[in-house]
Length: 405
Image (cartoon, rainbow, N blue to C red; front, side, top):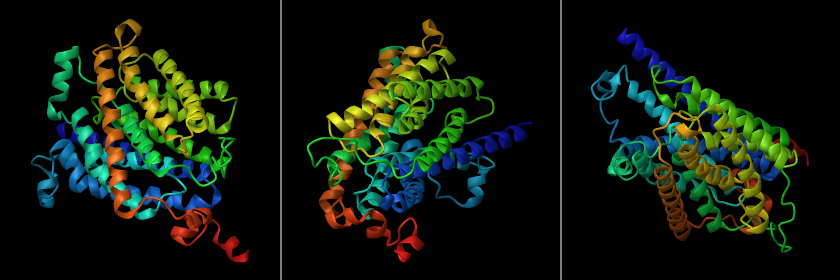
């Protein structure tokens, strides 16, 4: 029975890892549909290469920082249960958590689209996943630095982030804000002194496909964060579903049925519910998702038009602000007084969330400033006008059409 349970846990986590890995296709197609046609190939290549760099950086350095585990042992040791769990259980946990780590540069990619050079982005991905992300992951999930013990002593409860509203999404979103501010807006975005309507998406169907892939994979992201069959809860699935529905409906109303807002509204709800999906009531999750839908739509409009921050996919409002809201919401709707399971403290959520976003923004600013000083960040004006596809990859999204033209 013990062997069957281990095998069941291993397969359960593996399916979660595969679902979250599939979400990276969602990141890719969401960006493909949002950027202009001349940057679609670059969007696809970035996400795939970022995943490979992230996996390598996390294997070599990041996982060691976050959990104190190194994989530099012989293969027999890795599967024998000596520190790695029976049947190499820890190896599949690494796969699962590596897909989370790789989500951070995938989030950043959407904000910096259409004007960043390829090599600097690759270097930034390596540094972010090797150092910036795992240091906060260690603090929030790895039990490092005495952080959780301090929260419990100070506020009566630890910092609660079940599936990464803060650890993954807010960290990725606030790193993206730092990167976008360092890069500056795309050429022509604000030339007339007004935000206007911005550059239109190249493909609503591709954008929608990206959203659908992300929504589907998210149930692996949230539900399988339990990392065992014994710990899995239908409440997480129900809460994820209700938050997604709330985000969609709020975005439909507030965003006046704009398809970009609607499809991102689903993601806003899912971002926000991650932290408290294991402790909130489904009705509370619906409210959390609906508020996140409003936060995204209004945050995107303010970011683009009023602040004139050229965040192409709106990753700061979507992941940064909605992730921050999710961290706080776990300390509100997770309380027993509001139908939750309890065991959380709003002050612990407030302080932990603030530490996460501050660390991400400062760390992101340091990484992109350092890389910018050494090799530069932006494409040349001529290359940017030509598009990243031809300037970097020497091929467009429709090569046959380019040749005929």
